[in-house]
Length: 224
Image (tube, rainbow, N blue to C red; front, side):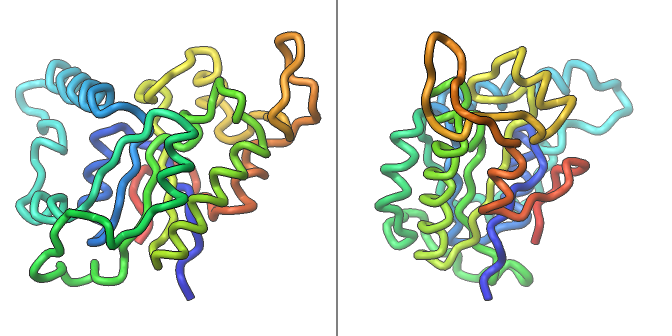
């Protein structure tokens, strides 16, 4: 039986890339919910800030110490960028691991042979502050992700950015998430009237739990 779809703990861009390179194998696909320029800019800012703050004796940013094995593995992982919910759903509707131009590695690293995945980095961030920020909207996208992963015999994985690393951060909403992860109330339906939600609300955790196993928010390490 295939592993259940999972929501992993939030991670910064650098943490996310390191975890994916070390935990997942070909033909894994990573969907990043921003433009390529924005993501690379966030990654550069994260690394630069860490390097500026570290002392002479402290270790450099982990991504700068990437092993040869991780570098080799990353070359066989497909990465795509989707800036809107519509782009995401269209991509998932036609997704096929066979379409990837990323070459198959000559030999998988022991322990990685059975761990390919379809990963979305920033699933919630993409929907937030749009008309799809509701149980209905998130459910439609989650269904598309889970179906695409199952159709291609991959594990569906969601990783959210940390509150200060999101593709489109909202200071007010991100602070709420930081204090009460996944406890936020969202409307059931994608309807809005006079600037306020008129539909009944439901806890975000309950919406995600219908589709995914949710790991505790205490670590950013990926699940095998």
